Amino acid sequence: ANGSMVLVVLGLLISIPIIVLGSQVVIKAVDRYPWLIVAGAAVLAWTAAKMIVSEPFLRAHVGGPEHHVLRNAIYLAVIGFAVGPTVWRKLSRFARARTMQYIAVLAWWIFFDWLEVRLDWDMDPIENWKVWHETLDLVKFLGWIPLVIAMEKWLKPTGSKPF
Image (cartoon, rainbow, N blue to C red):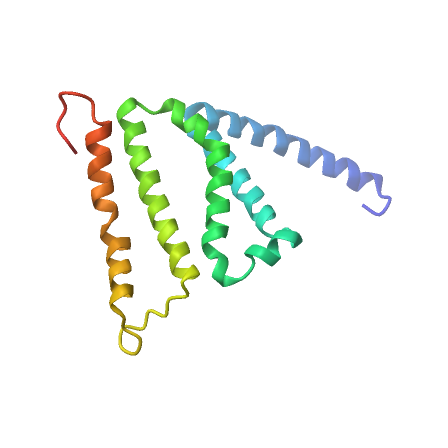
């Protein structure tokens, strides 16, 4: 405003109604769509995870492209801790069992991604083909299926059909 009282008053006259009307729109949207609260918490958690990963001390340990698995695990952990309990309470027993299966498959894939980075695989199928690479790749892509079937039998309620 550079000392101009007219611009200060004009700015207040314009901005206060915008804030009041905007807050009313947000309140009505949250009343109509309560999941917006969880989505907002997820966005805040994602921002927090981004800040954690970009911290100078941690950047040395998780900054390179070879640490993408660890970075993704940090993102999942922070977002999961922020919105997980709220979402978990709202799920039915069947949905909780299904969610546990998704988490198990996700952990399976994260483990094999970590293993791939740790073993420093060069997955060029023409020049550097090795049987154990293909075997581990097969376990990575198909091994989660028996895991899900076993969890399905373990978590299903008595008297219900699988899947």
